[in-house]
Length: 247
Image (cartoon, rainbow, N blue to C red; front, side, top):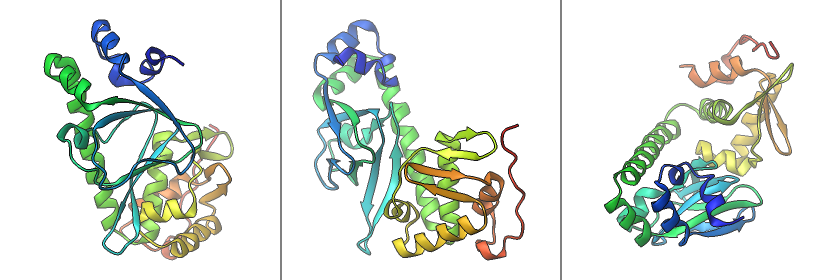
């Protein structure tokens, strides 16, 4: 696919006037990644803006305890880590492909910085991206620091269901991301063993089913109750209301 067609799949580029877009697409490069392949490493100096065209990218930061914590899952169309590139700083976290055939387009920092200086529309689009990701980062900090593991896992799954979930009549809400137990543990700030036990309890309660290519939330109301409960124990949640699906 040529650069202009790739750019058309990214909201940021679609906001540019045709003349500006024609100039930028000449400097675009594309890259296809396998699952687990790194886009960049934590501490690496960022000099290239990257945009996700297809697939998903996970951002992970190593904690003081030596564990990785997933701070964000990026979806198609997103500008990746714009604030770091704008300020020409080292990346505060690593970024890697979560799926095979993940595709990104990149452009050197110099070309976009020149664009921001001469085009107010592009500058506003950058500000919007930076603000959105700042808010997301604040929400993730709150999620990782509050509640017990059951509540944190329920919150992660609930947000994924709300963002990218696909309703399946008479089944539930399908989350089409093949997250490993390690991925989920990193998203919840816990160990893999604890994550596995928590998922097992969700299955036993009829809230969740695990599949090879994602997760099926079979009781959305029960999941929401757990995520928002001030009492964070699955054991003490009695008969949560079943979500009605397919109507």
